[in-house]
Amino acid sequence: MVNYPNGRSRAYSTVPKKKKSLTELSVTKKSTSKTKGMVAFGKRGMNFEAEINATNEYYLSRGLAVIHKKPTPIQIVKVDYPQRSRAKITEAYFRQASTTDYSGVYKGHYIDFEAKETQQKTVFPLKNFHEHQIVHMSNVLAQGGIAFVLLHFARLNETYLFPSSCLITFYYEKGGLKSIPLSHIRENGYKIETNHIPRIPYLEIVNKLCEVQ
Amino acid sequence: MVNYPNGRSRAYSTVPKKKKSLTELSVTKKSTSKTKGMVAFGKRGMNFEAEINATNEYYLSRGLAVIHKKPTPIQIVKVDYPQRSRAKITEAYFRQASTTDYSGVYKGHYIDFEAKETQQKTVFPLKNFHEHQIVHMSNVLAQGGIAFVLLHFARLNETYLFPSSCLITFYYEKGGLKSIPLSHIRENGYKIETNHIPRIPYLEIVNKLCEVQ
Image 1 (tube, rainbow over the protein chains, first blue to last red):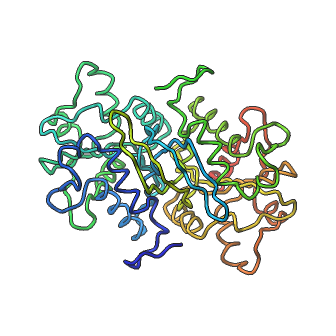
Image 2: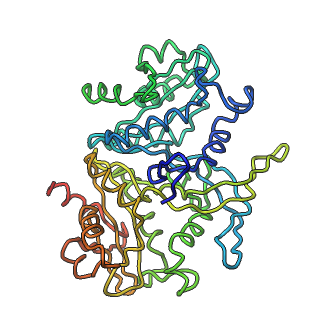
Image 3: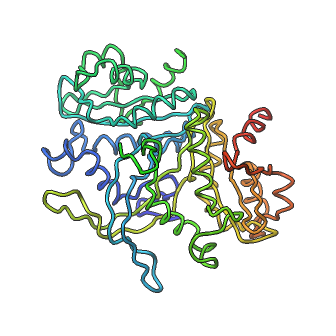
């Protein structure tokens, strides 16, 4: 177990600090390209993914849920095995994830979600979701899991929990549209009131969803 | 979605073929170092991880469960961004996983497990499990998830499902011992009778565990 200068152990972290920023770059490449570097998330100096990771760490530390971000899938092409030192990957590429980014367990329920942000103000582009992710969410729902997406409108500083069932319906039935209108998200999703701690208290909404089911 | 020569789509696979072998190398480095190359798994020409992945693909394809192997965690150090082509990772290292390798949902239950094999015939070395993985399993159990380890004795060609609760107890209470005796695993675990399809039908044992709980 590695201890970091801030005194917190690495045991609960799935992604190293260094990798986090690279992951963010790869995942939100298009949206960050306009803003260069650190995205101002509601002027709080944290981007959306970091906010969610902080929220998950809070839930874990309080024993409220065990939800982790999966490591970024990497396609490894070349590995060197220098003598007396560990394997060094010398050629690799970021791969498209075939499932969603986050999963875990909350009060016995399987939780599965994807988190995405947009710079748009009135719509959420569907290109943020790949078909195999939609298929994965359908499979999760069929097994009785709880699946959703967290959608962040960066310029509005509004975050919504949008159930995967709604996303799947929209994805297949509104084939012609390339984006989900914000009005549709407001009608069918749940706005998350962001707090100081935890940053994005999405489990409050999950509690509602569990009551509904 | 990428189609492979065997006609199966990539949508259900979390790890590319190339990466799988590298993952296996890194994860089972010590056990494979003696056998060089492909490990003979019960003379069926597949190693343990591949057997489990095949089992999970079977469960997924039949709509029985949605269980995936997490991508191998990689610490990225350097990335090149060549013009007009995708980002190329030029220096990275394998990282120790902070959670378990497999997770998913089965009949609404959260499933979480680690799979390990040994060349030993009478004991299973505890060094296969890191303390943060033990902590993770405890957290999962506290949230009502189902957690276990699949232990494969390669030379005996025997595979056991050993509940995490038993592993955790053994880990903390038998601190002096460096291995779990096979007799203890036989008494407290469940032997999995390997089949042709699915290869390692561990969900049959999970059904028993659910009845017990």
